[in-house]
Length: 73
Image (tube, rainbow, N blue to C red):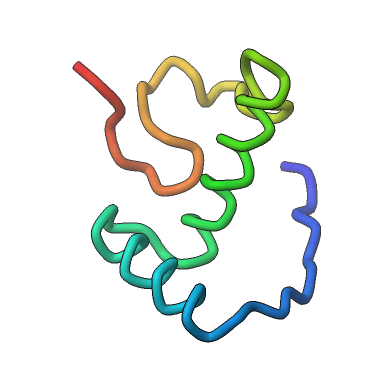
């Protein structure tokens, strides 16, 4: 598995609180939620799938790569 990039992020406390709540609502860690938000933004910008969406061997399970929860029907 490829190493994951670490990055220090400074965030407004009010925004952080919103992301924490959103992550809890989605049963994700804050880190997984931030990654989800970034992937979605990149996907929308490109008009399709974000780079790194399809991980080798990960697509067949129907599980999200960020939190392991099932997607869709």
